[in-house]
Image (tube, rainbow, N blue to C red; front, top):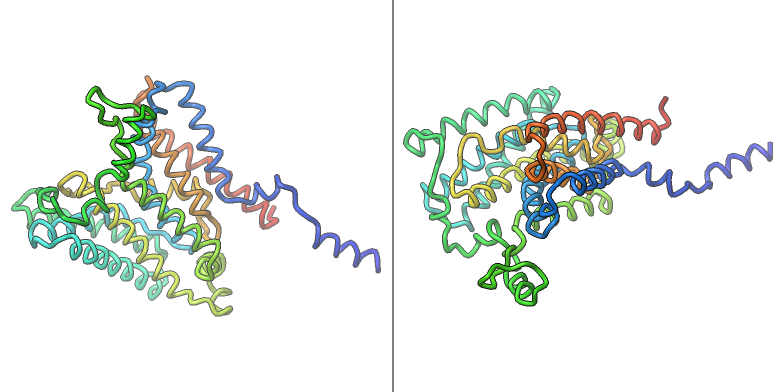
Length: 368
């Protein structure tokens, strides 16, 4: 009897090896994927891909996708999906364009109103899911088509028959808030680095890379905040508990309904943020903006370690998953490979990520 008790105590206090602890980390697959993709392009791509200019080139689309994917991953950890975020980018772009171009509002009013509008639609999504108990996959799939259709109709109405609304760049030109959502940050620092010969410069002395695109800063900042919330706050515990077993979480005092509503709202607001950034950058908005980004965001989340069943995942993993997307999207242009291989890559990475994450889940939970 004593030996059995001692054995049980030893089992409880036994320390896990570093390898086992690493295997439990949801972002392991994404980190490994970044290493493999980097090695692949180091071998096959033009060396210009890994210059400072090349890195900024692939981090920019990675950041735009990553902003969406980080919010989508938190919603997935909470046990739900939002397939409407791609269409939300187009619809929020329409709202933002109308507010700035047609209504002539400055960014200090147009940006909050656009985000609030998106949050309201996200709350509607969550309310329908919670009230009807329909799968969020179905509810948001329906909204995907509704928002895309409303974007087409709205653009034709406000632009006089076109599916594109122009004039955004002119409408926000000179606005003191514009540099927060467009352009490059730390321009002075990069000019100084070019003058010192630390980074490349043109013949007139201007830096080849004028600064860090602001979407990259948004991407890094949101990844840091999401990681802190998930790992260091009670709200993060609520998200994991809600996605793991919502009934048990509810019985333990977790505000499950509030958590899910908040996550739906945050996901929609992330789509609106991407819309604002890309619309200002392009100077116009159109009905195809954000097309299929919902699927890419979910794939990036799955590559980052999120389980389709909820309750498990990582914002940092999604961060690296988005970087993989950016590297492959732009990296193929530095190689002799046909860029249509990107579609093959998407399917292959999704399948590998699901298989890998399923194996990790079984290891963590002890399932067979």
